[in-house]
Length: 121
Image 1 (cartoon, rainbow, N blue to C red):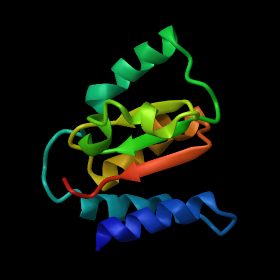
Image 2: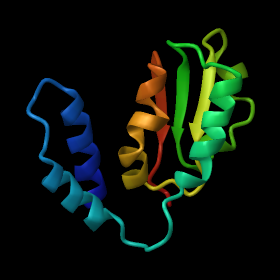
Image 3: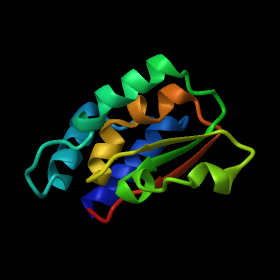
């Protein structure tokens, strides 16, 4: 499916292989956006920025990313102790949104481990 292909292309773009063109990524992401609704990420981006300004997340943390399954995992840090855990799940997240917002939602934190769940929305 387009979602799987977009995810594979996003991962390959992080490797030493040639990254897909912006045009190819744009086409795939447009094809993946089947249901028209606002991008769910915009609802949490400002909240995360405010949280980060008050408490700088540690580099090398375990980062939870994806849809509400991650967002609602309230006691996740107790399961992953002693790794510091940062939850960056956002409700309603679809795979294409997670890919588009990877830089702001994941990469900027430089996590040691990423637990990713998406695809059920």
